[in-house]
Length: 154
Image (cartoon, rainbow, N blue to C red; front, side):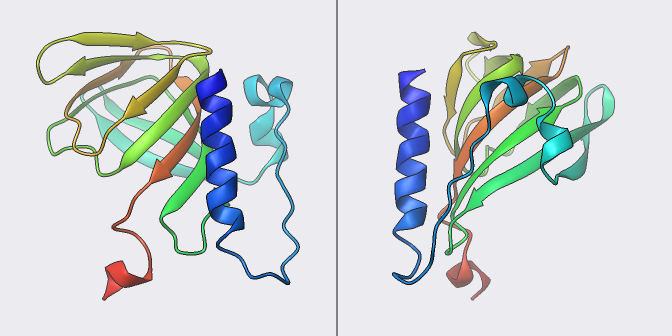
């Protein structure tokens, strides 16, 4: 839990330093009960249709914070059961804290890691392997992607 709190504090610091001095910055608080329960009833969210080995699935996504330069993203993701193999390489660095459900990660070398409620996972850019979650999951995520932002469009 300490790693997760540290990562959130770092994300907040990075985003707050990206705004102008005259802006009034307000934090977003997601109570633990809401995170494990009805957070998707209290915040606007997007639905992403995805396809895995077992067919289509949906991911619901709440963006809590996005840096001005569009490189840092903090949010809550909630997924249906999923079985997906990534052969192209994960597109960004991500820190995930699992609030509900979990995931079994099978790495390219065949080693397996399991994460469940209360666990924090770091997934480095370029990771390949299988992402298996037979029950689905809810996670808080922090994504850093230096390829995003205004200069990426140039």
